[in-house]
Image (cartoon, rainbow, N blue to C red; front, side, top):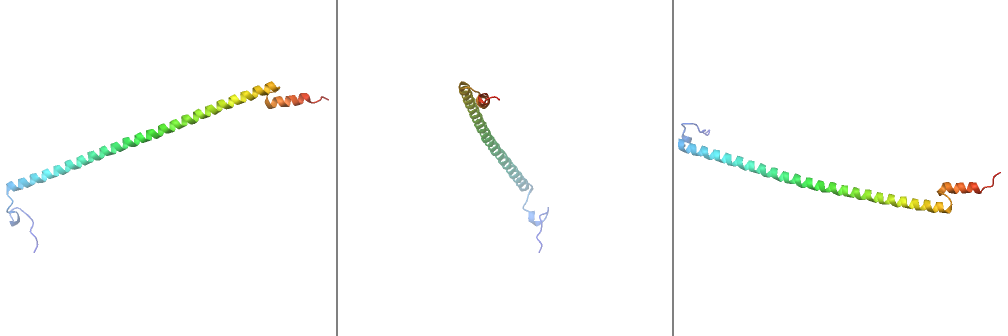
Length: 119
């Protein structure tokens, strides 16, 4: 036998009165509102967690960038120190060479040419 559907006036809903129907309807509406409110709060909490994660990752990335900038500054300072040391070394060797009577390689060849007998 086919089950009867609830329709106004049939035996299945004879116990439903206007008052109980209104109560059930209000209960259903309250449950729906409560569920929507819970979903909204969950969305807000998820957004806050996501914002916190993004802020944390941004801070980590800024720290990585700063560390890389610091390393680059250290490398640059090292290059400058080495450059200064090389300049000082070259100036010292040039002075020693001049004291010995010549300006490096060019001075050596000039002295060799001068010491050769002329024809």
